[in-house]
Length: 113
Image 1: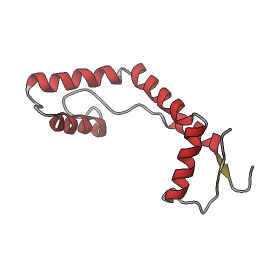
Image 2 (image 1 turned 180 degrees about the horizontal axis):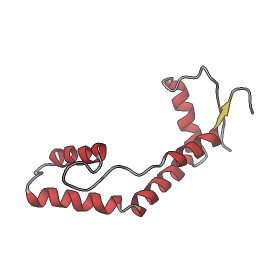
Image 3 (image 1 turned 135 degrees about the vertical axis):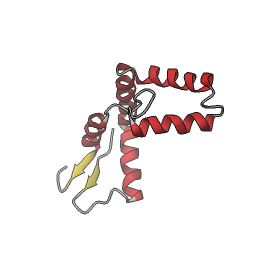
Image 4 (image 1 turned 60 degrees about the vertical axis):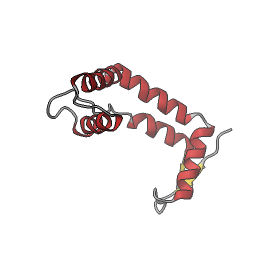
């Protein structure tokens, strides 16, 4: 049985205790697993996972990256910068809807129960 987390207009997303309660509730009701599955499905549908593999392979084969840190820095630049410059657009496709749906299942807003 999953638990509900009480939040209201004065609740702070920075509150570590509240974060812990939400995380626990999402773990208990399977929400974390559903979010992960939805995000992975969207990444695969958009070709993101394959684009990432191909880009990292190209970085090492061309000598643009010679270490994990080099490749990670370049990949993160593509993730943050999207399709700017040369290389694939590695902007992560939206998954906010999956997160919102799962949060609605564990949060009780205001006085609702």
